[in-house]
Image (tube, rainbow, N blue to C red):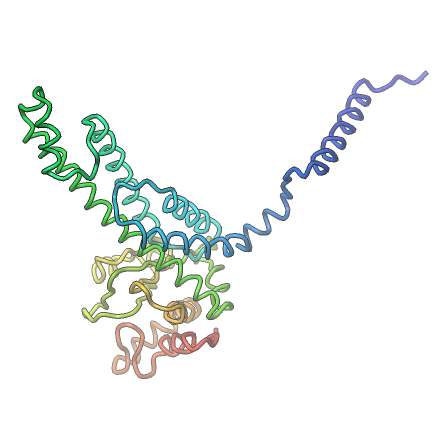
Length: 325
């Protein structure tokens, strides 16, 4: 007589229970996760792109409506979290994120601290000086030192107000960057896809950080709409070479990554222009260095000399035409 395998019956029972569980879950309309579909969607950025339009509208509404630093809102925090997710899933990244998160963290800390102070003193956060002294005048035991209390309360509130102003300005910049990335994607999709898949000289991913500022200045001090940084240092493409750090100390270069620096509010066509510069330099860096050496008469810092091939590629991209390799 054949011996039965001891665990065979157990495996069969577990399998039947699993099938029953899946059947009941689907019957009840429970949500399930298709791991293959999730992986594909994350890489292709399909759901994130659709969500980003709604998120930008929400953060825009927050910036328009929020005039008080005492209002607690999850909208900006969700917005920053979603951008971090997109940055992780793509090589074209919102370069304003780190600074925005740092400023957000400081503002949230000061807001919570001031709310605690307001509660402990039993005072409205927006109380006026006159109302403060009237309130404390009616309580004899609080007469002593009320001037110092008001000064401490007022300074904390003033610091919170400054942090809130900086917080909103950083949200405006990161929103501007997010918009221009989405606009560029529509303006010249082929160029977006290519720039979103670059490799560095060591075959590692080569991110491209897009960063918005209130104003951008060229190396000569002239105000410009955008500026792309591209160099090689220690055998890798970078935008944080010693030369760039010295020439553009205000701009945020990225080690082993490229960067585009834009004036707040520019169009997607301008980002395509800067991507055009990077696209050409990525494919023809050695040739371009030779061009600079052989044509000093025509070379202009910024890539727009009379015969500059980098400038020609950028202008073509700005018109919505894919540059040649």
